[in-house]
Image (cartoon, rainbow, N blue to C red; front, side):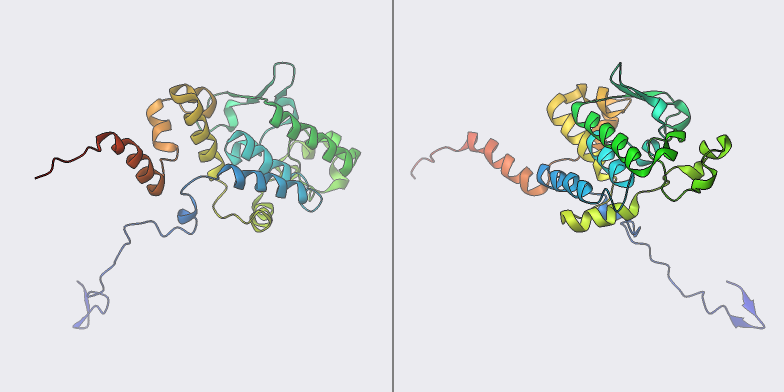
Length: 238
């Protein structure tokens, strides 16, 4: 404790209390996953807002369908799409692990890529000069013929949070966009078991086990009751 002119520091008796759980604004929205019904409503809502949020709506569909990180998806370029080999190539420079990654172009993802092409045509010929997969409609269109400007961050979407706010309202869902990745990982783990790491981008099974959504308490109890029925027996009369 320090004193000033003989007086005790008024903050010396203040006790700092820290919550056991994070008070981060988004933390309470990062738990759980989207079920199939919620996911379908999200995708339908994205279709409804394409005109209001061009390219943002498609980026949300891309995220939902493949479970990849938003930061990586929004840095993809048209040249990263290899339709011949049916893969999306994430260059090492944009991935979290600093390694090149590949993503399968499923029929559902191919449909999103087609929608992106249609959106480009709708927005005008000037977007043919931008290589970003998700270009920004707020860029300076007078400078789109400048090669340096075309390839700059000014011409790509940095975030899709405004579109996500609208989608949540229309789809009547809560949660953060991070749940897209968790939902994908959970579905992959359920259907593929330990082979799921081939499609989730996790290096180790243990990492995936920590990441995917465990059974909710109610389901856990119901599942346990199914198993425990094995032990039901008729007690002897005394």
